[in-house]
Length: 399
DNA sequence: TCTGGGGTCCTAGGACCC
DNA sequence: TCTGGGGTCCTAGGACCC
Image (cartoon, rainbow, N blue to C red; front, side, top):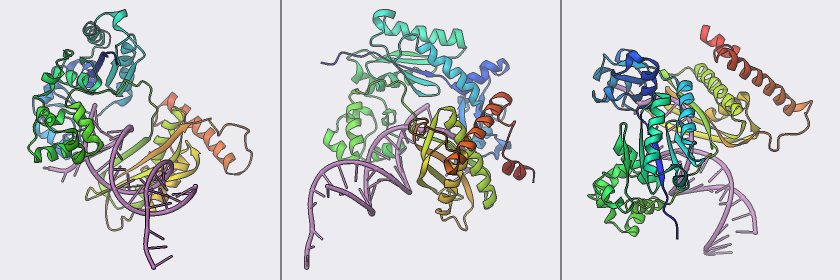
């Protein structure tokens, strides 16, 4: 028999916007919208996060920034400062790790904590939840919502229901009542497509879904259907898993205006390759393959991927392969909206590739490039990311 | 009003092997 | 002249999450 678990889900409220209000006291109490430049309503891109004051105007994350601007032109529109958010994120997770090592970050501002073994030492989970919220507020100045439940799914739903600044405990045995009235979209893995499909056969709430048999759901949605059958009954056996290794590292960008300029596309790919490679080096990873992402003016997205001759953390290698992949995308006659590069099949550097230095041949060239890249990383760390750049990109920018 | 950027996981088809 | 079944790996696309 499996012992009952106690899982905490901690979710920072309007995280990026809360950080901006923390760092800019004059913005507290005002609608703050973090995202793309609205450019007087003509901006490209979307809202990354917004304060609760902004939500009162109907603004939501993922809303096109121009729409947000029209809804609330008096709002405070700011560009995201990811390094600052990452810094505070680390401090959030450090507070959670005071209770246990079983902390699984879900994103920059969200985590599961398995408190099953901690309650003996620290007291009831509800008390720990209260304490966590208090520490986040007192030490970091940031609000959070917390859910306490016997599993991940229920804990996540609970924290969502408590937002903002809430603490919701799902009583053991009360899972059914708790879930029944909720719309299907609350189920983990049910997005717009699946919800529409289920609505198409007359289902609206989790209670409706729970009336279907395992077999019926399986026939309609495959393995995911069986998973939903369990979730609808509050069953979720997935463990809290700390430190999972990254499977891919990517960077992509949408052009300010759709472009037909092949040289601009290549320069952009080089700069994306630079970003991806330096993040690989920072994490001690090498890529065994590359995926190129390409989106045209009609919003049609294609990807092309291929393995690399040897694992690498060099921009030159990623870029060279990206050019080969680009040639495999038929984009004649179409303008380009977005390009992206993702490093895949990651492994940690040093395993296998270590050994004697090679003095000649491609491996030696790679070693020289690695040292150069290491020096560039160092300069950027000390003087900022714009302190040094590739001549190919500088010429482009100024020419 | 067009629709970001960072990811994960699943599926389906084809190649290839035994 | 017809044509197994299982397994794995790779690629491309798509759904989903924050």
